[in-house]
Image (tube, rainbow, N blue to C red):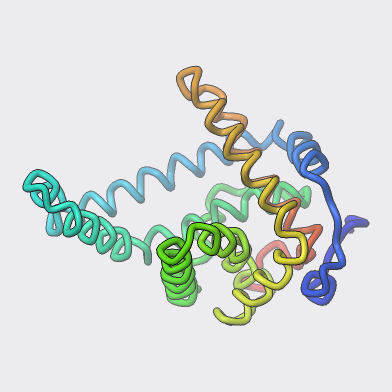
Length: 236
């Protein structure tokens, strides 16, 4: 058991503390030994997501709208394609992310674990749609509310899986907890984005390290804020 385990009660009260450097340092220590499995799982996700969106795009092709200068209909069509693919891609993306969470807690990594979360496909799907809509509204009204919500809701799906919270409960717990130290959580995320951009410059080779780093860092933050409850939340 880690000494810095958080809990739901501590999280919503803001009773946690960490720095950007602390999160990155601990995550980096766990990258070695996890790269191949996480990157391999990412490859599987990309293949499945590409095939899914490709098949759907055969029936809903946005390209003619863009070619005709109808950007609005093209964007809407692309969004519909993404939403239709979501029941396939979202549980996979959650499984991929939770590989990083497992590594952050020194658990054994299994690539096939990314398929574990289809039993929660519809709650995860509707939560993702709701978060997307609220965040888009925030960006449409003013830029800052959109940025705030995108960070505040970032732990919603892991909370649904790990703590078995319902959609709105997970969203509110994530928002309340993150808001207490929003700038620190934002700092970790923006640093990871910058590292990813820089690592992609030399032919993308650096992504072999930064992709696992991102997922493990998210897991380290989650543990410090909410506590990591179980290895397999579905069957426990």
